[in-house]
Image 1 (cartoon, chains in turn red, blue):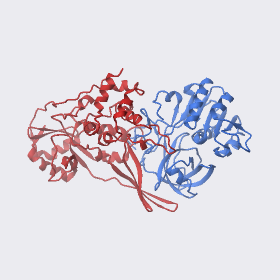
Image 2 (tube, each protein chain N blue to C red):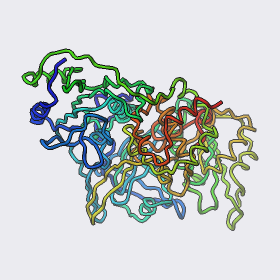
Image 3 (spheres, each protein chain N blue to C red):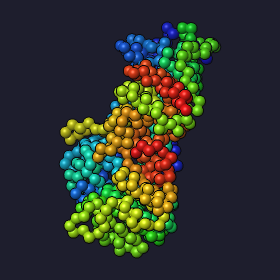
Image 4 (tube, chains in turn red, purple):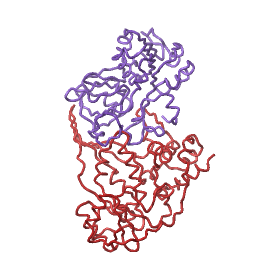
Amino acid sequence: MFTVQESEIRDLLNVLNKEYKVFVPAKVGDESKFVPYEDNVEFCWDRNVLLSVKDKFFPQTEPLYKFKTKRQNLEIEPLAPKDEPVLLFGVRSCDLQALNCLDQVFLTKGFVDEFYRTKREQATIVALGCNEAEDTCFCTAMGVDPQKGHGADIQAHWLQGKFALEALTDKGQKIIDTLKSYLKEENLEVPETKGFQLQPDMDGVPEKLKGMFDSDLWTEVARKCLNCGACTYICPTCHCFDMSQDVRGEEGFKYRCWDSCMFEEYTLMAGGHNPRPTKKERVRNRFLHKLCYFPERYNMLLCTGCGRCLSVCPVNLHITSIIDKVKEAN
Amino acid sequence: MSNCTCGHEHDHAANALIPVRAKVINIVEETPDTKTFFISTLDDQKPFDPEPGQLGMLSLPNVGEAMFSVTNKGEKHLEMAIKAVGQLTNVLHEIEVGQEVGIRGPYGNGFPLDFFKGKDILFIGGGIGLAPVRSLIMHCLRNREDYGKLTVVYGARSQADLCFKEDLFTNWPKTPNMEVFITIDNKEEGWDGHVGFVPAYVEELAPKPQATVLCGPPVMIKFTLPVLEKLNFADKDIITTLEMRMKCGIGKCGRCNIGSKYVCLDGPVFSVEELKDLPPEY
């Protein structure tokens, strides 16, 4: 592996910034998120960012095409995707796994989502291992290795005041080659991630949930849930979106934006029928989607154990406690 | 798309979320609240070539976009029968021939044609539910020798609410080896046909068990299924099509799931046997 002193990381990012639009994890007021690298960013290396990198591939609002209507006429103008290589430096394993989930949704099953694909193909990802788990972390329970980002181009570790880099793909190797003059070859030991406090047992849960559609559990869970949707917006794997239009006179554009299965309108049909009319059906669908339906469809869990929903839920309705309850259920 | 994994031979080169421009070339008023729109591309071609039962996303981009079943296709156009029930459909009912629209598709699995081949088929429809069923009936009529006897049982609230009247009263009854039974909910002046709900009419007609397509309002489906069961129809032989709210149409936006299936991709056509494996959430 190759190392660079933490104090010199900005030199390295400045080099990368010439070829890529580089995003780094940073503290921004009370939040933390990936921001374009600039000299004065306040890095966030000690813990994962509050807002995942999901929006770099699947923006919260994304224009799809422009249109013009005049009397009976219609013009449609597709919006060309930005041709801009992006480098994300410091993505945690849980959020990389979330991208692997999104890849399944947006790139498989007959249709490729071009908006997502373009951004995904333009991105180079440097993963960053986790030395210490936060109180809300449970990635290992979801089959994620916090020290190895699956699908990254480079694996980085933040160790002993240094960053250690290891190429995982040719793309990653190329980057390390261009940075060689800043790097020293040495091997540092990567420690096991410390401090996991949550270890929900997922063994057999997706299979068991198949038989729990009518369980009383959902009534109990729904009673507590506020249907606020915070969990879905903060989730790195939630991918549901709405499509709508912004119209100004004769011109307008079609866009998509994040939506939430927690909202009544999400499934409300013209004419008034709603297949998921109450909180109970909506909460049930959310947890079954994450832990049962998605595994059935794509053979992977739609939860990566990042723990964000645990920290934002206003009523402490934790997915980890749902998993425990499923395990306990008769 | 070169990296498309669907295994079908359709063309995914275009961006699936962006509609093509098309125009309305004819509008037929079916009932007071339902119109059939004939749609061609600007160069007078069929916008896409759907299989019976497949769907298309139709838009007036400044109003909205929604999924409709394609009720028939011609050489150079598609037909969609649309009931005015919401924001987009109410505006659609105001447009006139010549209106340009956006359209994309085809979406969904369509009817299992191989399953129906060589069989007698019973079509049961209620209200606008005849729209998707009609795409299969028209297919059978275009390929008449591939199918056995065709029987249609169709009901609506009133005479005025019967869709596709020309097919129901003129075209289909005179087709060899095809029978049409029509009912309306209540007695009314000028109607000497059958009166009563579809489930009861099916029970009265007591057709022999055969391949069946069932589509209509949820209440009609709910009461017709026990009748078919009583008449010894097998779950695997009863085919229905479902409706859900949809936005993308390509299995990404999430909302049309029933369990792990997406109605826009894996449906809208399911057999009752398949539905019994899914959560009853539709």
